[in-house]
Length: 176
Image (spheres, rainbow, N blue to C red):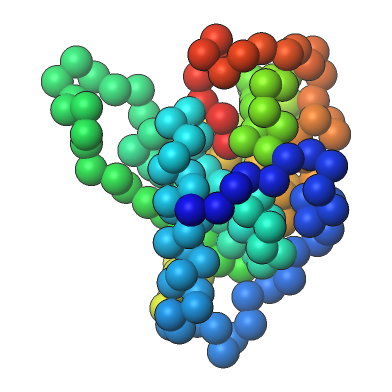
């Protein structure tokens, strides 16, 4: 598990490098993804994390899908982890319609604001073995795709958010 770097660390402001072809399918790449997953798992309010947030300047982000849906009363407290791994992601398409959404970030702890995000987005990426796939989504999932891709491009949500407020983490829900 790694420490999540905070706003002010140079790695968060750099454009991340694509994962090189020779890294796909290697124990090194699996180790990076496993470290990201363990780090995200330790942040109970976190739904996603990008590699730069743990100091690794590669174009990788992961999503805990199981944390993107509200729990139902019959959900067991320790439900199965449903993890999505996105390596070298690119947007295939996004909706013209944009929505104002509440947003926070594991690398800008305690600050929340409103951002304008495309209502729907589709991403093409590769998994750890190098297999290409596409995944589309709306609402929170589309927001996560955009937020995490911003990280890979050296952009933090506070760069374009409005109505920024400072709260302690017990007062707010999900953080990407």
